[in-house]
Length: 137
Ligand SMILES: [Zn+2]
Image (cartoon, rainbow, N blue to C red; front, side, top):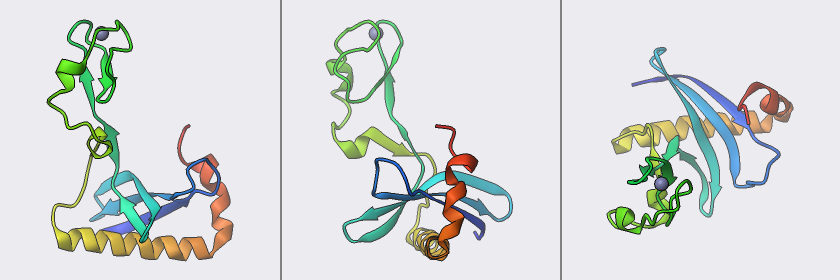
């Protein structure tokens, strides 16, 4: 597996100061993964793979609720019994959509993305297009 393109979208503004950039990578000129994040942690920068919030459907009305909600946001029924099967921690609330499954690939991915992030971050004028060109928020 080879990463053939990396696009870094540094994030300057916003409430989450630990979130440094969004990243889009292309693998083997054939497969694109978006919404990778560069995050500043206690021991330095790390790469977070795209993740999705885990939801579970209300047994009464079928509405999808976040795993940690105790009551259905639509009909108010208690979801505690439903959620006992889940571990109730922050780590379990999100699940990776795509991620490397071995150490070599994880290290390769991490090194490529962090290197590219440093290059982009050092040439700071490229920052300004972020809000226009990326996310639709
Ligand atoms: Zn419900």
